[in-house]
Length: 316
Image 1 (tube, rainbow, N blue to C red):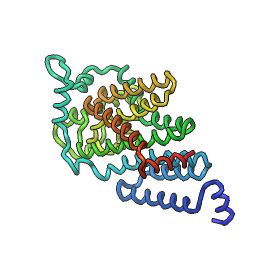
Image 2: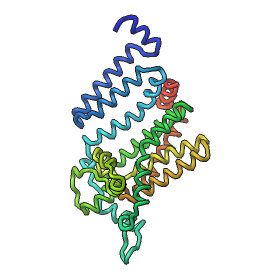
Image 3: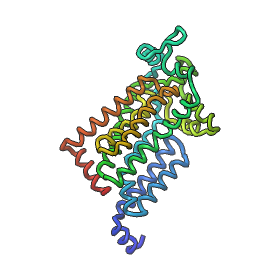
Image 4: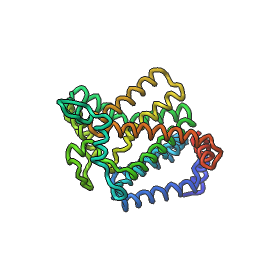
């Protein structure tokens, strides 16, 4: 790199140290990913996108600096494949199923069914499409919401993403402390534990079938671990979005839309047999705990709270 190019880069906020750090992180991530989960083209796309946004313009550099919080979540989620939670604790299959039936059982035809079993017997194309549509929002809505706050309020942008990461970290801890099989696993395999069981679209296959596509089949083929049903982080994500919409007094229309999406995902999680009601409640608890904990941490005069403020300043 020439002296002129270096000087020009530093005027734009790109220092030699930043270039070296990003290069080291990029190479380190690719090598570690290869060792843990094997090479995937997704990894190159991620590294390429991060470097492009960092060097493209000052505004994109600020965005990817803050959005790196989401990238950390994605990497940790992917690396869970290398360390299945059932290595560390027994998987709860029958006990969770029986608890669901005891707490939320539905009487139908003289027998007690779990809500998942009830909806499996009473599925309808309208509910199939509606549930699939709600489930498709679990990634775009948080990402779109982060984009919104980046251009509206950088502090809320950082706080939202850090809350999102914290809720996921809490969820990951529970995954390892309490490995749990989803409802569809019991429907297909009973109460026997079968390691390395591949992901399954369950009731979402009806959405794919209705439209003649394989979108959910492709998504669930990349799942990190099927024994991570408790808590339902699908149920936690929209609640975080709804909280930040309410906290910042967005329009009534926005609050209503996010409220509908939140309840819709909760219903879809149970309807499609991906989660028990208990999983959904655990996801709600996880989101609530993460929100309260983050708000408490921000108010403390600690190294962590000061680090958060530095990150806010870096993206402004």
